[in-house]
Length: 160
Image 1: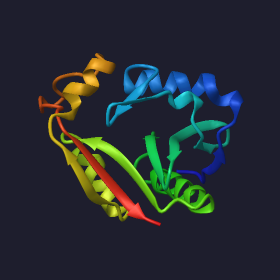
Image 2: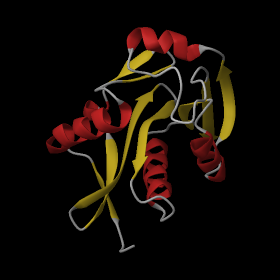
Image 3: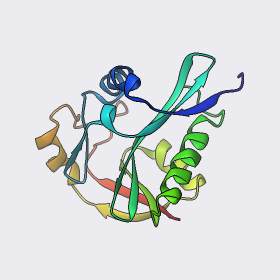
Image 4: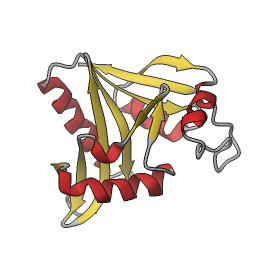
């Protein structure tokens, strides 16, 4: 894979980010811990090879924490996700955040593996939290593509 570069999202990226979120996340919103996020309007980073997007990360800073709201990489295994997390970690540190965290679901074993390799540790488990999320985002399926139930939120974090 050719070299990629990371850049900060700009307001001009909103439409593109929104299309990515709808395509990859099923709607214009993302729901975690009963909170609705609109990733197209969040700060973040994109990875590109020349002009072709190969990754996207959005985040939200609240209090002492920086939450990674979305992470997408279209060239897995080439360091795109790792580079995007590094950029978010630096941004969080620069504004004085004490932790970088994210939420995934019980069925997302690929992501759990990846995040733990990045140094994240499980900090919280919210049993049956997805039932509440479905009230805010009914597009969340009951089962994933492998037939696993999507039901629990798992929060992972890195202390900064």
